[in-house]
Image (cartoon, rainbow, N blue to C red):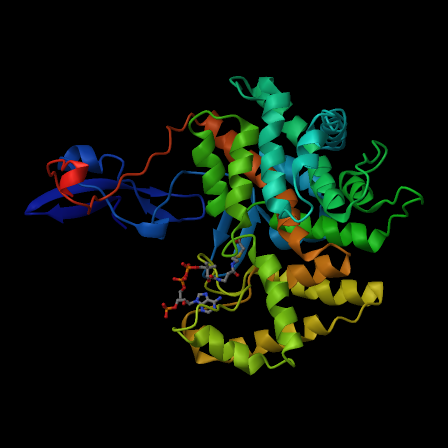
Length: 428
Ligand code: CMC
């Protein structure tokens, strides 16, 4: 394989180096294209062919259905690791030893109190507000209460901001839920593990002791690990690009939360359950919905199916499907929606429309079934995704800052009107 790519434009030839990743991925480095060609750019809507950075965090092979965090397989991490270990791994590059993990957890716990005035902001939202909008606003508002988190030049300053947000974000997540449910805002306990504390903060009632269910803890831990990073997806790219202007960490994350909200991205987990419920109400006629998904005149899509990068099984979906069966079984829940999901999957995998387009279930197809079984309201599902994705966003933001990446600023091909004279309003 040549180490250079050759491009011919109007009889002239240009050469560009080919970069190779550690997993043998190849990319043409066109960073000199515009200068060497006198202004020619590439056009790639949706960035389907464009790498925005070199990254050492997450590797995925969409053709083979492989996902690794820092060189560890997602299957092994989901089975053997805890969420906080995975967070440390993603952010700092190596699995922590016991001492490092304890210190990380202690530092996070000591930053887990949120300014009381944040409650006033939360109070101003209607109960009907979508939790993702609330979470994004509160995360952004945290900057005002922690101004030192904006100007992060040293690794030490970055670390402080990172443990602050890892401490305060679960509080915001739980308060978002409690506001929605009309329940008092509370704190968990520093004596609990990270995920246990999230559950306690979300679900404890003011008048009774909250008893943690180890099945629920393990299920949530696994889901958070599976969502923790996914290289340069829509929300992560948003975090990196917002942060590339040297906006602070918290507001960069708030931008990512907004991007995640959309139903084509993280919002799909809510959309999947709403779709499955609609199918159930409609008498369970999966064929009708399959036909709708294939009809190009109908905007309906089979939510939880398809992926920009995976053209094979999403490895996360495989793990979640297995976990959904086990968790519902362990909790003694029979959910007809799981059967509808399995039926849809089977039909889609045998249907030429889906087969030809390589559309497989993605991470969001079965995750909602588990969130439902854990008692989490449907419009909180994407918030749970955000909680899981937080360490990935942080890791990507940190990498971008440490690599001193330039401000993200794509180009365009202008297709609007050419220069024309201004016409006064009375003559238009
Ligand atoms: N149902 C029906 N048709 C689909 C679907 C679907 N879910 N997904 C893609 N297609 C069709 C699409 O219409 C197109 O057909 P054609 O070639 O005839 O025009 C073809 O498949 C390629 O689709 P695309 O929209 O060009 O692919 P993309 O890479 O731009 O979009 C996607 C990827 C995930 C946005 C899309 O598959 C989709 O909308 N899926 C449903 C939403 C969803 O589940 N999102 C969660 C993604 S995983 C969680 C995360 O965001 O990380």
